[in-house]
Image (cartoon, rainbow, N blue to C red; front, side, top):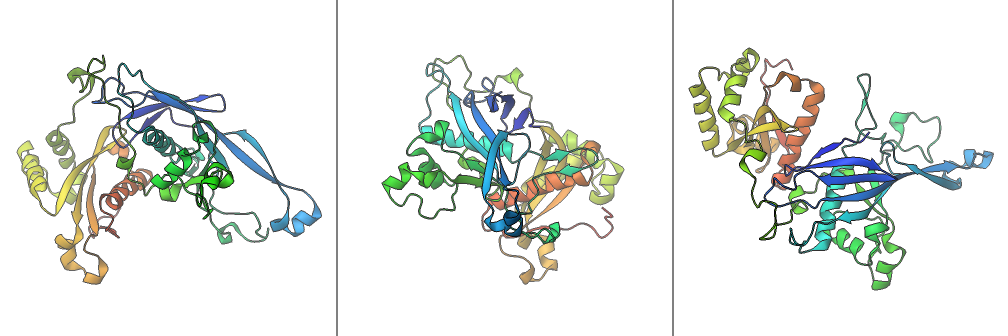
Length: 371
């Protein structure tokens, strides 16, 4: 089911709890961040299951069969049948925190965080089988003899209902202009009457488009007032400091399997020199990767055209803004193909967001790397 703790890209965390007909989101970092995330909100999330009339005509003409449906409580994500809206918002006291300058932007932020949680849901995840998202194959209107592999595919999406907080006349049009929700109806918003009628009732967010949104557009925090009991900066003992990079590299680089590929084993001074050189490199920069806050690996992201790799490739093989990366997983518990799939997709996703001109992300494993 849904994870109880959600890690947002800006380092903040949210607790998610099932409630009647939906889920409650609560901020965990009210008193440790420089400014506070809104305390919480509640969403209504449901799945609408479609049924076909079970008769001979429907079987002979599946595309013309009558469509019926019923609504059930959300259990696992579906490809197109999940509906969601924000039903309530818990705002902090105006005595302690300044109100959001733009209420619409605050709602967009909560919607973005909710979608971040939703699109990380799993249909099934066990030792025997791992299904990271709903089955993309579309069976409606397709002949029963067609194998699954031959069926058309659809994008995973969630429908945004015009209820609760979203029932306002101008809110959904604003969210659509902000790029966080979409519609297939090209005439939506053509005039004022459409904005208050049926034109804004079939809005949705697809997983494909959501992953292209830069989180920095929507994530922000509220600032404490002058006399607020909540601190304006992190109290020193309340938040753990960043791990010492030299200590991590010293441990990882002295692992025999790592040293075989990187050749940077040795005393601590060797890793200090290694890191200093990486930090001063003008064509790349080093990254410490964290998994749920725990450091697990070292990465270098570089511009291919300025790297040695660029001199080995034809100019047709890469563009001016294409990037590449080197990777080192130092912690044993984070090794394995199931882990690689997650951290590699996250690293490549960062490269897309960092510069929209990037068209390819390259990797260059050594010829003797059997992995």
